[in-house]
Length: 494
Image (cartoon, rainbow, N blue to C red; front, side, top):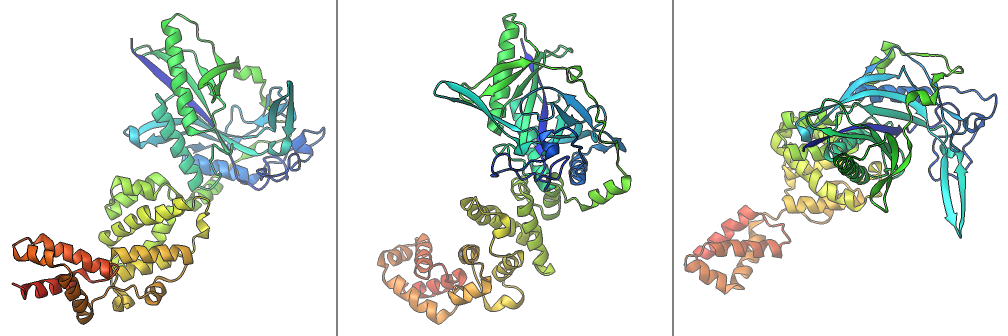
């Protein structure tokens, strides 16, 4: 029998606002002393009133626009009632029946542009951090309130995903979008991007969905994939063995590599939602939405399409260039610094290869480096490309690909201008025939076997000699000039 998995995702995106969702305390809780970023509202003290963080609302609108959602004209907050020690007020301020964004989508390119519908994006506040400790036979819990009240956006899909591969692509696409619009870091490892999966299994031809199980506690993309795969297999096993699947919340155990029961799944009525009485409904003006839309950057999928269409880059190169907005912006700005006469596809393809190759290598070797700490500018890189193309004022210099990579690496480490590096280190290609002829003559005289091979008709020997010339000149000899001189000297030996 063939089974089909039906998966929906609920993703919590922590925003990078300066203050919390409903109070003025700092939202920058990472690396802060526990319980220092608190205030009456954060702590849920009687009489404390929430005030909406307008920046968080703006971020929600940005997310909605980026996901092709409809932004509602009016939205409200609700109280979500549940009791757990990390929930300071005994309820969470969230959104129930009037979320700020509805009906969006993300396209999965690797799955033939499969459309994953976004049901809603809603605003809420995060909870405090509860840590359970077992030590010397004693169990206790400690509470850090710093995270409480941090702005969250919950992005909920329709049950359109069908495998762990699709789940991974969806998560990575969503992370990229969040980082492009700069509303959050979207790092799962630091807890600023948390994903819960709702999974059910049914016979492939069956219309009715199976019993839904929610999986929590996944802090890596690979863990999400492992949990999804495990849960699909578990449910198929239970179906085939007539074991009833219970609608419940299960946690992912990293150590045991399996999902484990936590609690029976709540329905919305269990939370006893009602409108938040201390926050009036918000009116979202279309003019405000337009202002936000006009300031958003071109998103990764559209950039990739533009690179392929405008510069004839292949899918692989365009994908690498658009993985990070800072990397993509650096590429675009470098192109803008190039003179129009060399802004052709050949030059831009070379720039793309350089960035995806040497640039990425050095960036990965310095993984802790922030992009804005790179020592050279887009203009410097454009000048290096211009020298390589022997254009504009740089006709007095000529470099090859090997020298360019050498100069580029020195630019990376020193931040010096490429022209200065070439001049100070005498890195320009050697084209002086007198200087080269002396070097080549000595190389030919030192390699009688290669001369003998040439005289017996083996043309490959000239390539060997050229290689020796390049080695002796540290790659700075002009290959065409060197070839002519090698031919000239060898011809005299015939």
